[in-house]
Image (cartoon, rainbow, N blue to C red):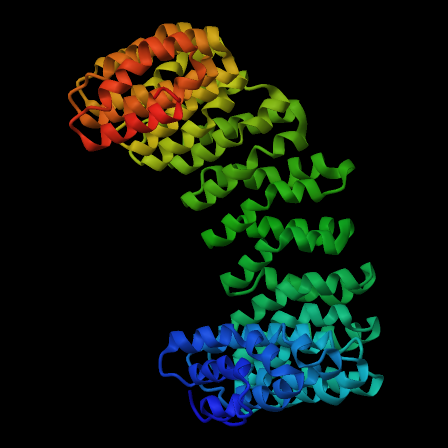
Length: 601
């Protein structure tokens, strides 16, 4: 590390009086100067140990100056230091001496690396709470002022996060100075500083007196919202939510709405995107009257925006918008003012927009009720189930339970089927995987007859998919289906089909039989396992492929607890003993493990 002071070098410095207990400290301090980054990092992480051993006096007079002077280092080490110092108050003598921690953290709050600065600011915010009001004005506020008037933008950006923690406990004269400093940062020449100020504007507004919010924060908000940089303007939209929560309806109308209207039509799509993304929060903060007069028309514009990202963000908010509307007007507003735009988005050219809409559109059925859902939403659901984009179809299928509650799934079943079949055979294995995971839910909603007739063959086909993750998910799916439809159904419909695979020429499919038996044995119970499944497992112990044989041993270990003693002793034990003598190491190992787990030795 660079220049060191305060703490001498070598063991003598820490233990000059011959006290061996301080010797490790010297070692740690040497590590702080070591060229190896990892050693320095370890040493920083043990700072609390050093401080404890040094005692509060020496920590204040030697360790902290040493750390303040050795501020030049790798970012990783500085990050660890910034984090450690946040929890150091107790080690310097408690809240009365918390100000001693400010110098090293002040230095860290000005470094170039953002992550380090952010961590230093987080620690400073933590420590500020431990200052008494007097100490806060004597030590902390001057620190904030120094940072706010620093030459480098790094220190000024850090200052933006510290105003809100020291403002509430400052005296009126100091409060005025703090507001003045924040104002000057909001119009700083450097965009990065204005961005930092804009991101903290809402937080600062919350701790100010209402008059100051109206007279000072709102003008700052208006200026930032018309900044030349779109990265600043979009952060002003975020601040709008916090500011709106503090003002009355009349003030909102006159002070905030003109700026928000401007943001909805901003030339930068990023700003419009931010309005769409924060729409639900804005709606709650603005209240029902402004929502009806201003926000609904704004939302319509966002839904038909020329940028796909903006349309997708707005589409995501459709359901939340409906839920946040006053109950008495909800249905009318959605039907007359939102639904026409939704109908257009269903056939949008961009797959992300359609996918975003498909993930929430089903939720509208609970808001609009049965008749409207059947008449207006059902055609849209059916169109989306036939969409060429698999994500759209998948999002509709994954949210079917909303519609099922309102109109029952039968209305959809005719269109649902082709969509499910297509997704089940999609070229992307992740799409196939997602549809498998919804199968138990679909099965429960469609009923056993419909399932057997239309979907059973699909579930069996997945067991021989070429991707292992699909075969594994298909096995779990069978177990869930048996839990839903019962053991009799399993015995007649599933078990025979699974057992046929034991003779498949492909050894991977033979192994899938074993995996299915593992999953089904518990759900099917002792009788079916002993009579139908066990003979097949035992027969497979003679398979030529070692992978199948050792999976037989694992299967026997899994289903053993379900079997009775006669079956275990008479049938399972001899087979496991034979496998225990197998020429393959793995087969031997798993057979012996099964013998010991099942206590058959």
